[in-house]
Length: 513
Ligand code: ADP
Ligand code: GLC
Image (spheres, protein in one colour):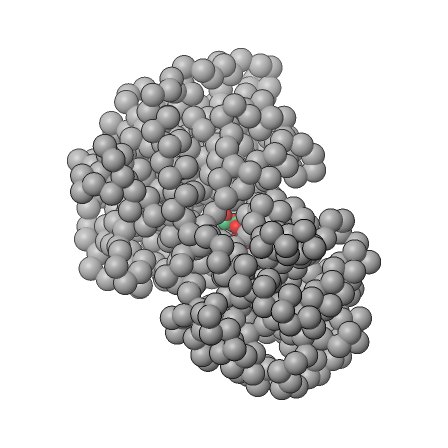
């Protein structure tokens, strides 16, 4: 059946632990909001499944009780609700919510308490998400609707393919999407039986990972197919160090591992209509972008100067994102001269060091600690260049937002950053592809050298305009990537399932259980 026809040809359950605008700690929230809409536009009947966190329950209107899920031996009773997720003015996606007050209705984040400590019952919390995902994707489902494919995202739903593997009846094919291999959902070995998986699954050919149980490894091992969020990251995770110990498994499954680069939600992120901006603009009205720089400089207490080069960054503060490198070069950056604005939150030490950095350079460096969606949009529009010195970056969304906003990014050449930013050189300027700046090895010297390249380009106005326009002309929409996911879903329907391919778990290790 051709895409865009009115009758869907394919049904997909998309399991996620975050979705914008209900809850979001990073890019997974953005992807979970935008990819399902793009799939719908290709004729796929896609429905989301998410835990009933307080914000999710509060934000979603017109919820309907679908069924009670009270007899899942290992888990507290839960109720399945349904609603529609308002993702943009023209679309909405059906969403199932697991309302389990004992596990999800609490103050704090989805994974940690307010102090940043992991919730002690995370194995049970995300075990339930994965278990219900597997039930809905099999003949054990209480629903009339049955997905042909279950699309799992990161470790939080990594156990779904394992539950499906051990289910004897009919079931959906499974796809495991890896957004970040650094987070694996590792729990004590006793979690295996606590969560109702057979003891035999605690094996090197199964969920066992260095004597513990890994939710992500379960997904990578038992899923019918694995997708990582960019082609470069798909290659990087097959070797150390970016395989985080799972490189052997991933390399062994390379025939069933694809890299599909993320897209961006071009309704939510459109400089021509974005309500968070001081002034909207387009590639043909780039002069209006300056009003956003002024608004940002005023709002954050920077010296208001239209000509000084203003860098910006928005991120989780973790080792991954390379803010230690930024801290090292920031003092030199102010002497260029340039200004810097940073928005983010995360590791306490980085929050403290960055706050101190701003105090030491008043009027030149501004740091806002916290999560602020509106400010993040204004930063994309108001700064001249966006910094992403990430050690590794599975895909990254901000470098695409910034190109789309006429804000050439400066990024470390890794993962999706390498796949989505074209370095500014005489050759790429000549062929019209240059859209930002890359640096290749994570040293302060290399980063600073790249900052100096940005500075020269910025002060050469025709070059800068070309860079801005090239970035704004690029197609970062989800269309192509959603079509690639659809092709994989379809290929899974005609492939023998993992069930038939998997080796029985018979090594000595399982006897340790
Ligand atoms: P990751 O998922 O690794 O955090 P991405 O670049 O894929 O990185 O996506 C991060 C998303 O989260 C972007 O939409 C970014 O703007 C947003 N974000 C991160 N930190 C903040 C913050 N402190 N305030 C607002 N938005 C943030
Ligand atoms: C992860 C990655 C990021 C990616 C996002 C969405 O959190 O760190 O690079 O863009 O997921 O796929």
